[in-house]
Length: 355
Image (cartoon, rainbow, N blue to C red; front, side, top):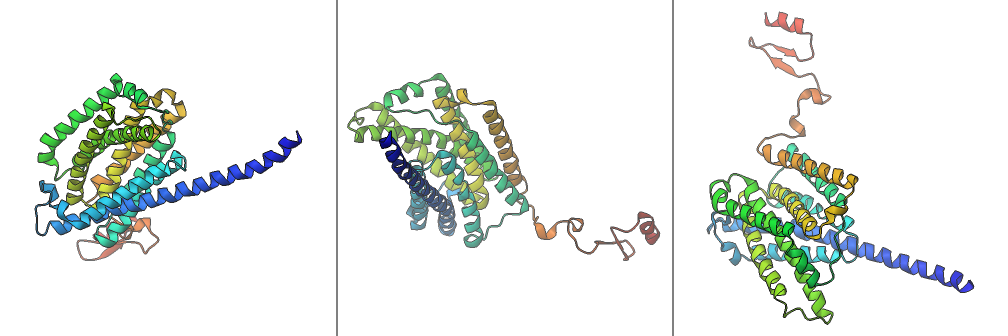
């Protein structure tokens, strides 16, 4: 008994200190991830603008950006950000790391205003915040991912009818968008290119998780390099990332970064959560509270996207709000005879002035 009393207090501070250190390491990695990812959009956009002055634009199918060092700087910035993001999950809980990814939207918007001279109107700012809020709510209420320890288990999940159906639907819709709607409406509708890279991106994340599991087993002594599934996952990852980057570059080349970034984040997060839920079947364990939270988050996202997209060309800010929304002098209305009247004066008096 005495031994227990003496040892237990000595262990508890060590465990608490260890958890605290891991928490702050994960928090730091997550913040660095958002900075690098947010900056990558702006850097690549800067490169695409520079390329448009002397080469074929990415929005027109050109690939000259591959020769531009600034674009590669943005590409590696994105790679560093994603690396930090994956590493953060090893130290901090997913409920902390994933919502922090929304900060990349704010980083990109702030940097765009300084380096690209792009501005968001009031509707866009509100829509951006609503999109981030909705995505965060969805992530918080998303069920925990099922534990998969080997490729054999993953292979059985990959051939489940639900995930195969999801994969087939994503591929078919993406092909229709690429070959039919893309050439017609891709330059005017921001959702087409973003939908393509988001849907294909959800498959790339699943392939990346599987490939990481294969490498983990291999480094642990169980060689999976002879497993055909490993090479299938690698080929799928390369193909998906190629398509994803191609259409993301087109969207960045045509539309403002401050609009592309939040919409892409929302779509990508939504499809990744959906694909993960189908593959790992976490939805079967969702409570009523989580279902309501997920639906509420999704509706908030939809409303935020609507504000971002529908009013992006409207010149609307706090400075030109109607005067009755501010504590200024009553607004004066110019009448046909050149006289003025206050909006706050009595209607009968106004009628007399008109006469």
